Amino acid sequence: MKLFTHHEFDHHEQVVFCHDQASGLKAIIAIHNTHRGPALGGCRMYPYANEEAALIDVLRLSKGMTYKSAIANLPLGGGKSVIIGNPGSDKTPALMRAMGEAVDRLGGRYIVAEDSGTSVADMLLMGEMTKHVSGIAEKCDAVGNCRSGDPSPMTARGTFVGIQAAVKHRLGRTDLDGVRVAIQGIGNVGHHLAKQLHDAGAKIWVADLNQAAVTRMVEELGVTAVANEAIYDQEVDVFAPCALGAIINDQTIPRLRATIVAGAANNQLAEKRHGEALAAKGILYAPDYVINAGGVIDVCYERSNVQQAQIIQQVDAIGETLQEIFMRAEAQHKPTYELADQLAEERFAS
Image (tube, rainbow, N blue to C red; front, side):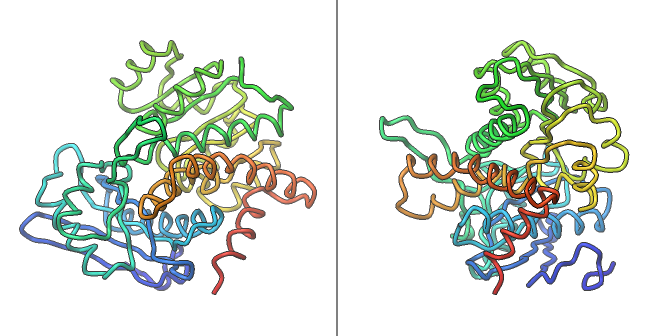
């Protein structure tokens, strides 16, 4: 298995392979860039088909975190970790503690948080072994409403305001009443996003491999359920990917009938050229690491004295950032991902 010549290797500062025989831990931690500060990024647990698939995912995700933190103007670098295993059957407290020990050995260069397949409870277990963990502190607003350290509500909020910005730019509308949205993936983030869109009057289609989650959404919000593979074919205004990455590719782009792609998933473009393909097809793309930055903003400021109202204000500014990217891309006749990359690279360059 190659690393330095791997097609997803992008001058990553450090890639660590972690193993603990007693707990069965098999994990990879990737630190992409720390020029702006320590690398913060979630820990994903997934039953990857092989080690190569896990390496590809962690390299792509860690790079995305560098861009995400930079474009959100956070004092953080980019990193990510993946645990190879089924979170439903392989996860144990011992495995989570072993992962915490692996994080601790990096001495603070990497700060771990939850991601797909892990939870606040898992972060608390890791926190028994390391102080370099975020997304675990209870957060309360000015009137005493409190929630757990779970960053998914803020990720969903940022995605929601990003969809608002995209709809305003492409459809010329300042509201979402009757706007048609297809959500792929209704885990924690997708669930929160669907609620916000429903409350704003949007018409919603959902798909997920977890049929129980789909049924819950249908019963709770009256959304329309479609087969997982059919979500690309829906005649909607917005396609919102909120599951795994690389779903905008040669096979799916010809099937898309939406005029906007704006969702919370990381690394939505299988390759950069797919951003150009979306633009050529007249589809407005909200760069993923811009629109889904609400969660990292939330966990970043958990480690400071910043108040909840200020965090919400910065998350809501995601819409303004996207508006700037949309307008500059249009004026310069460039795909939106390219403008976003330029802006982020200016901020994290050494």
